[in-house]
Image 1: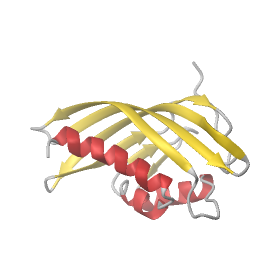
Image 2 (image 1 turned 90 degrees about the horizontal axis):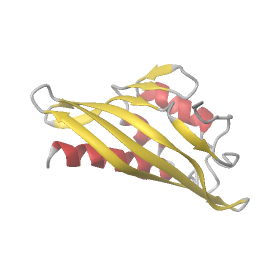
Image 3 (image 1 turned 60 degrees about the vertical axis):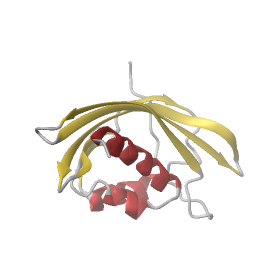
Length: 150
């Protein structure tokens, strides 16, 4: 598998796990990563990410956040010699709940970096602060989030 395919699959696996409400598994993807949060704080590692998601993400009685994260337009740049890569991508989060008709609830950008370890790629960093559009997040997040100022 090419590095670009492996990295794109990490992006899509993140979305799949988050939408399934598998917070522990998605947090494990960030075990050795540093993540910049929307509030400007940085956290590192799976335990810190899991604590953040448990504090922020509303899990509905079905066991999921009732979301669909759609990640598009990945621009992946690989330095095969150094074993590093970067990726800029777009995301849109859709949600439907008994209290909320199907709609886009937020959209923004991910800026990620990756490292290759033991012939596999993993997240090294993610910037969650690049939120461009915010809709009705009342059924998704437990704390308020604002769009990034232009």
